[in-house]
Image 1 (tube, helix red, strand yellow):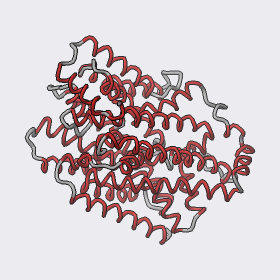
Image 2 (cartoon, helix red, strand yellow; image 1 turned 45 degrees about the horizontal axis):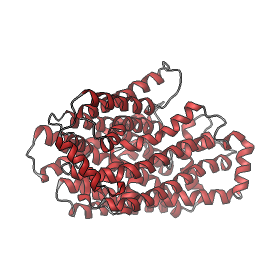
Image 3 (cartoon, helix red, strand yellow; image 1 turned 30 degrees about the horizontal axis):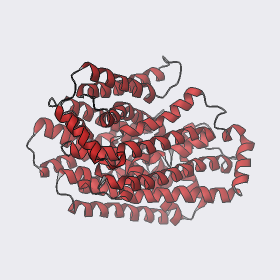
Image 4 (cartoon, helix red, strand yellow; image 1 turned 30 degrees about the vertical axis):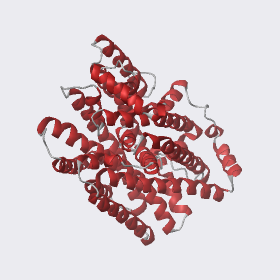
Length: 501
């Protein structure tokens, strides 16, 4: 373990804890803890949304995919970029407006219940359950990514790596809630951006330049530079369909709910999309450069998932220990920025959507904040236990774990969010049918594909999103029309949405 790299990591981790302590002093009620009092500026909202979105897969999964598959990976990037832009353009401002109109909703399940005036609480409880189930896989992916980082960098055991990362993340999320998560994500997003700009440039210069890099890749296998050579039609559809997932990711759309005002959304969209496009290009170039740089010693020989270490190897080999420590801290940033958001959304589901809704309807804000904080610890401990599976033989890769959770949220919530913001005739029954259908379809389709029953390989978000949309329309139309109060709130949300004017 290099002392310079270790010191860099320690300084970084202490900085994240300091932000947590400062945010603790600014957190006085559940709205502050869960949504930061709707006080985020455009820059913090944009970069915290991007950092919490991208996770360790941006620095591990995507470069590894590009290293193993070449330009085939571009379909995934294009799908995500288009999906993210549409999410910022059509969901961000409208959701910010609607959640405030709908009884100042502070969580996704809270919004569903208030949007459709669901007095039975079934809609809230079902959506909260979906959040807890699929975030299990998402948090697990981050912890697996952390294990890869610490094993390669410090020769730590998998167990030690899990606990070191988990303790820091739990600490600042426990203390500062949404403000701590958003501000740490902002700085983590900047660090990730820096790493994905610096490493590709240095790697290509070491190889001899862009033309030399491309020639080296081409000499190994020309198909690496073709985006259509080995991708089937269904394969391209599956990769592009990742973009559908954006509409339903709770840890991303809560950033939209927390922006200061709808007028801030266009500026936030510009910051967020610029960060995303440059970062994803950088991640892809890291993988392509790795094909050329490691040609004599391929990372994927005997272990395809080992390709996800290409970023780590570059950071370790190309830079002195101090710079390497900063770049490797970017991976930790990516991991932490997603896990903290997921822990916060999950704990808010426990506090607001289970504890307050079912156990203590008159619970004070202080009590709910502490329930949320305890929830962070409990959920994190469960996630740590589940993450041990990533160290077992045949454990899923970072990208595989992320893809499953991404599909679950995209299919369960994506279509419901879009319809609820743009279709006045939608009902609570339609929303419930859409959530259940989307979630169940993803689980069933995944199992059928794994067991070879479905002969064609189509990403489970595609059938999930389509069937969820159909069920929303069918069950909304067969029931009674929305009541007057629901229609009036819908019209008010549109009126307050500056993007639609």
